[in-house]
Structures are given as C-alpha cells and as structure tokens.
Image 1 (cartoon, one colour):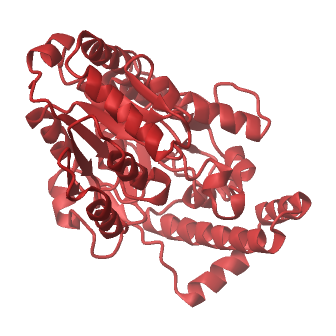
Image 2 (tube, rainbow, N blue to C red):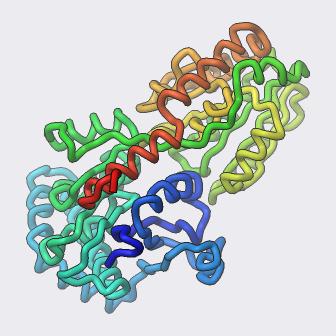
Length: 433
C-alpha cells in the first residue's frame, strides 16, 4: 500500500513512541524518514505500566503506531518452539554451536529460546499488519535482534518486502550476549537488504567476526543530534569562573556503564572542587546513591546529585541552563557513538572517556582518554587535570575541538538525511521523484 505516493515503512522499536528509552535515538531520526515514507511505528517491548504515552496520545501526535507485545504464555511458547523446530535456520545454528565445543547445552537452550521468541513475534506481526505475499514495504528493525530474525526467517514468503536493520552493541558483540555468543547472525544477515552500522568500530568487528567482505550491504550511518548554535566564543564568554568543575554523566544505570567507577574516582579527588551530576535511572540507582553517600558525603570539595531519568528535551534544557564543564563516561563497552557524548560535543563540552571502541574517535584533542579499565586513581587524576586547566586557553581549545568533531561526524541534519535517502533507494524509490 502507498500513502500519498510514499512507500510504506514499518519501523520496529523497543518502546518508541510509547516509552522513553529510545527517545534520544529514534525520535530525531523519525521526521527524516517521514519525508519519504509512510512510517508505521511498531513498539515490541513496552514494559507494562511504563507507557509514557497512551495509544490515544500517540494518535493525537499524528503518529501511526501500535504495540505488539512479546510476552508469551506457556502454550504459545510450546507452539512457537514446535514451529521453529521445523525451520532450517534452527539446525544450522545448532550445528554451529556443537562445532564450537563451548557451553554447548547452555547455548542450545538459549538459541531455542531466541528462536521461539522470534517465531512468536513473526506470527503476531503477520497478523497485526495483515502481512501477505503481495505486501510491498520496507521493514526497518532498529535493533538487530530476535524480532528481526523472526521476519528474515520467513523472508521467502514475502518476495516484495525489503528488510533493513541497525546494529548497536548488545545485539552485536559476543561478550554482550549471555554465554558469549550472538545467535543466528549469519541466518538473519542473509535476509537483509542492508545492515546499518552506527560506528566504524562496530562495522569492523562484524565484518571480521563473520568473515564478510565490505560492500553496499554494510553502510556506515552514524546517529546524530541537532546543532545548538554554540560557538567556542560562547564557551569563553559564558564561562562562570566560580572555581567549581560541573562534571556531568548521562546514561542508563547498568553494570556495563560502570558509574560506580566515577564515584570511586571522585572519592580520590583532592586538588579540585567538583559538582558531579548524573542523569539517568535504572534498577541500580538506589545502590549507587548508597555508594555515593558512603564515599562522598562529608567531602568539602565534592558535591553530587542524581536527577533520575530525564527526557531528551530535559537533558538539552539542563545543558542550556547550566555551564557543563565536562562530560565523563567510564563505560566498559559501547556499540556505537553514544548519544550522551554527541550531545556534549554539540554544546562544545570536553569529554573524559574510557578508550573503548568509538569513544576513541570521539575524544581526540577535546578531552582525556582513560584506559579501558581505569582505576579510581586514574579517574581521579583525569578529573583533577580537567579541573586544573578549566578556564584556561587549553580548556577553550578543547571546547572548540568538541564542536569541530560534532560538525564533522554527528550533525543529525547531514546524517539522518543521508540515511533516509538511502532507505528510499533500498525501497526502490528516487530522491528526485
């Protein structure tokens, strides 16, 4: 079906637009896709009771969207498992697991659960959107996970459908998956028209891991954020000169982000006045607050605050209302180019970051790179170095360099426009039409 001569696109997300987890990723890209496509949003992992927007509110915003729940009853699981056991892809993966000779039983169990979830999602998707052999549409999976596998597994049934996926981190790197193996990647890849990478390091990893040759199928399309119109002169002119380094961290609280390393580093800071603010929520928030109280309370030179989760607009408002001196991340891994760092760059903010994957390209003359596994003392030394140069010519040069990196690599207008145009070509359209 076409709407006003625009081809159909089904964009499958975790919870956008109903939840808030993907606001900073999907929301900026969505309008660019709508230039060329009639986009139907399908949210598949909306936590019960965690909806930010209701179905009615989403419709009022002019979005065509629906929720396809992924929870399964026992009977549904058994039916999907039986269906999956009839698929060739199942046995290809099981044979590969046996051949690897590592964690065989656990990996087989995990693979069967992955395939069962994929089969369930496929059947629900097919029913919800009336997917038939005559369907002409582009399916864009924002994550290269079981949902994408569910459709590619049945790709042969829909000759006029094109499938595209983005890949990020948890669904790309073997060490990010339980039992150290990503499941059904070659099988899923075989059904894709494009596999989109948000970072060069991620692309290099994937092509090497699966012994693939680079080509049009594996393009690099970085994410991006909007330009804020900030200049190096603005950073100089608005410098508060109050002697306190406003150190910001911004991420969901999970073990891989290692926010406790920031707390331990701050506890070792002596020759600097620091106000640390963490933006982000998560199940471990209470534990981190307790650790901060234990390590930082009573320190005359350290203040701290946990804001909890904020919407992307609220994060931007925080940058606008406050002179953020430096962004810090001690993450263990990144799948792409973290949006939190992109936002800092767009405001001309220097960055302290661990030297993992794409962060090594995002911090280049505009901050301090820590080792991949920094000690509390190394983190403290970096914070004190940044505090010592704060307000100097060297500091403002770092601000200018952050703006240059943003402009060259992470301006959403350039990045998302190029991506949307490529998706139109994949769908068989032309930008000039």
